[in-house]
Length: 140
Image (cartoon, rainbow, N blue to C red):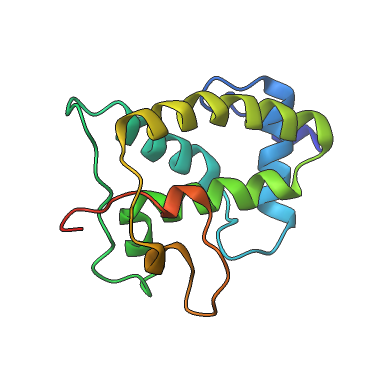
């Protein structure tokens, strides 16, 4: 692992080794959501969402989902980004990030409601959406 990856502070409750693996992945992999320092921002957004003071949370769709930054106003897209990062990590780092996400996901599931409309369970191509997209949105 390059030395510069260990010179930075750990990411959101992750070990220095996993943080370094994430930084390396952010700089060496091409992906829709993978970008330098993105993972720390995505974890911050996800954690902030699941710890909001409201009892029941509803997702908010991005007003401009095609905008590279605005798309992350939708917490389900943030969770997509975390999933994409997890897929490119080495095994040990992937396991550690998955454990961190498991706790956040449990809170997300507990504080959001499932969308009862099966029409909302697939994307435009008919591919089933990840479970975090099948939660109620504001206005839904």
